[in-house]
Length: 258
Image (tube, rainbow, N blue to C red; front, side, top):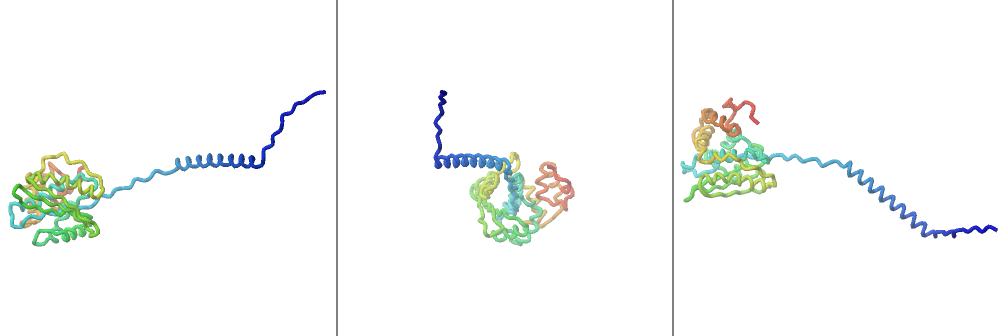
């Protein structure tokens, strides 16, 4: 007689079977979710870079004491130096001074001074968001300078920069004024210009020529600053285009160098 040995048959309970099915389903679900997640991560588009629009700004002649003829030329020298200092600020679009002056003269009137309200008026006429309102006064040790960045909209808050000291030392403060203002706007600062040759005193002749060009504190004599324009074109074309009108000086009307 043959004797066949058989392994005992073990039958799982219904509860155990259900647990096995649920476990298998859960594993499959997790696998599918992880694969779909990877798929969407791969297909997700990179966020587009937001273009930063430069802030339009104008620079007005600085207020100086009306009776102090020794400081009169500084009302134009300060904007020249400030325009030069800020020409590389990518966060700012400085409107050329030759475009600003007709409106500035009209708003300032015979007083040739500005207040926050009149400065904001010029900014609105020129469709600028900010305007530089400066003031210079003599002190025992030199000059005191106040630079107010005034918004065209009353809902914004002005920003003030102060500096006192020797005239050219005060003029060097324009870079710091820009940096602090750009930080105030949460904008990116710019690299300080390497050209150290331009100071307040070094632009006195240019400031007086600009004064005669627009008639800020002397009688206007437009179109007669050809010598100043030619000299500036050979040394600093970008600044020449900032200060003088290409309508009166055709040499400025050519293609601007990059």
